[in-house]
Length: 340
Image 1 (cartoon, rainbow, N blue to C red):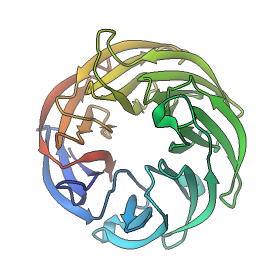
Image 2 (image 1 turned 135 degrees about the vertical axis):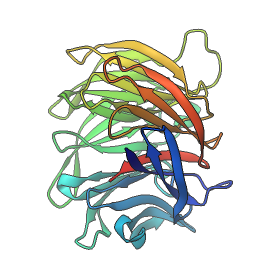
Image 3 (image 1 turned 180 degrees about the vertical axis):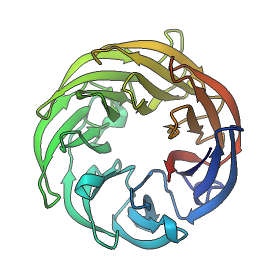
Image 4 (image 1 turned 90 degrees about the vertical axis):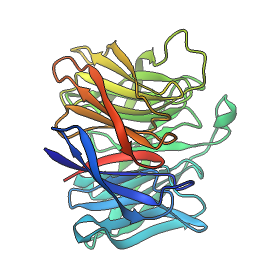
């Protein structure tokens, strides 16, 4: 089977934007790599069910989200821009026809409505404030704006160690409902909900290199347990990055930048306990993002600094990963998405 995917990232060196390619699950090769969207700094993006690409974009002194029609050879549809730097995260809420962005630099979470022509109109902005205990946490730095299974907006704030819950009305406006204080200096980055138990979530913390297991009820988070992502004898620098959960809710996968590894856990039947399954080196430098392929049999890992993509085979029964190859070259990759 040949699966289509996109990889984007920084454009500080050789990258020119977002690249399109094919992954062949039989030969375990990546081919037909070509530039799909030339643009500045597409470090994160999302693809809608209508085959519209919504990407972070930096346009001179403005940053925001731009829309492209994949079926029309990535035709530019329009953009929603704001002053200063571009966001760090973008997500599509299909059922609500909203797009969320989180701006690490300005502390602003923006909510956009998807218009009939697939362009975006800003409906609300949340200006976050505060700080925490580490030098990198001198201000609010939201790193994720995610729709929970109960249709509430969840914001992970690296800068304040807070995970906030907002109620969303039909007009795309948000109202703060609750705040969870994560351990000081942990820097919550991204989280995923358990697809088999929506009252459980797993949050990766960038600065503490931990995963938090969280109970979630009526918009309120509570801490169950924290799990370390680094070997006890590792003394080098590291920042935790991406987190993914298998469709069956049985396995959790996370990435380390510095240690350059994928750490996997088996999730207990009650969803509240994690058993360390494996730590596998990605054979590249700085795995900021990774994705399970549509079949669930592979994990693909782009590397921001070594400019390659690692293919890991995944055993569906055990969750174990095996390194296959890293022969494909894609520059400065920080985001990978499969699409139809």
